[in-house]
Amino acid sequence: MTTGELPVDHMRHLLERSTDLVVRYLSEIEERPVLCQAEPGELLDLLPEEAPEHGEPLDRILSDVEQLILPRLTHWNHPGFMAYFGITGSAPGIAGELLAAATNVNAMLWRTSPAATELEVRVCDWLRRLVGLPDGFEGHINDTASIATLLALAAARHRSDGSIGQRGMAGRAELPAFTVYASDQAHVSVDKAALVLGLGLDNLRRVASDEAFRLSVQALEVAIESDLEAGRRPLAVVATAGTTSTTSVDPLAAVADVCRRHSLWLHVDAAYAGNAAICPEHRPRFAGWEAADSIVVNPHKWLFTPLDCSVLLLRDRQRFTDAFSLVPDYLRSDEESVNLMDLGIQLGRRFRALKLWMVMRTYGAEGLRARLREHCRLARRIASRLEEDERFDLLMEPPFSTVCFRLRAGRGEDEEQLNQRLVEAVNAAGEQFVSATRLDGRYVVRLTFGNLRTSEEHVEAVWRRLDGLATELAGRRMGR
Image (tube, rainbow, N blue to C red; front, top):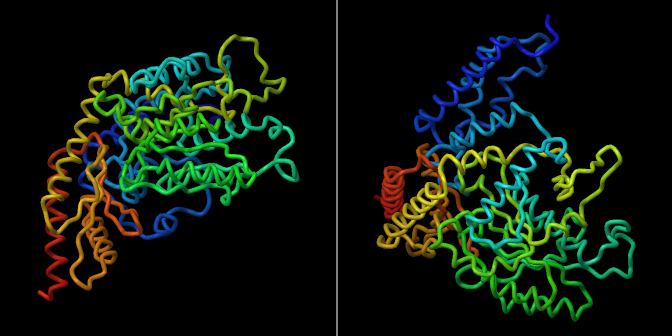
């Protein structure tokens, strides 16, 4: 029995076999049903309850990955994955993830990993320039937009009352209730941030949206004035640039003006759609986001970078340092450089910048733009089919690469049940995976394109599926 690392020849064999498995998996992924077909608890029944006492052969472990694990996954890299926000673990991103795991650094301080720290600074600035944000914004990488929103609201709270970091909020009668504002279409991560930060869901204002599912500025003004009159302290607005359901973009310039007049923090959740701003033709949709205090953009959503990689861009980095920097003696250093641990709650920080750097260098700005444009083209193509077919109701022209629609119900028919059956039937077939949402209280089918492997052929395939199911469901309700 050895007590060190695997021998070099074993290590090479493991990594070569793993690479072969990855390449085969990705090249043959269309042969698998995109949505997992397993039953709950199925894998648990196949796994031993105790960890092995003795090491097992590497080939057996990889065989179990192939036989036990892969068949029980929902395959996000499948070209038929059209649910939620489709993502791609691209080859350069996968290679970057491997190298990050191999180096296994912790970029908490500049000293603990100079290259990881400086690459993160630089690659975030590349993204900042690509999306057209002005000089002055600085970025760092977190795992998800949920954490980015949490950090942004924590920084907003500290700016509003710097004593909270020391004294907390509980038992302070002199401290008014803080209120946060977001549209009724904003992501649930805003609610979770209010929970974690002790602001309370009662102090989160879900402001009405307009007919295009964008935050109503007039309703926002009314909500803020009402809270001021009641003696509450308005804290921040979370505007959305690319809502989860429809990818609508809030009127950012007008919202920024409201925030400026009331001295509120403006956080922009651009997790999905912010990536589209690398295309100049989409940039006007984001006018006004340059006035934000913080903006989150997720390369792992639509910039072909494997999970997780969420870039938080800050207009004033010092506000985050003021809110989060706590340096015990064992972490003190004298280097004149950013220490990433000072910008959030994490101490351990993975080398996420490496995979984003490799993706951006491999495809280049031109290649990234071309791929995003293609996804938007595919969305417009199927949207036009839906709009031309009287059996379907297209909710709105897709702003980016997400399409929302309904199958129209006949007289006396339950529209929600009909569309639920449509979604279930598409997903049960195994070639595509679509999701659903609610808009104005109505059940809506949702298709999104964001995978590098999705082509015109896959768009035609999902249209044939929708067309056939619409005919089949109509036949059923007509008794044929």
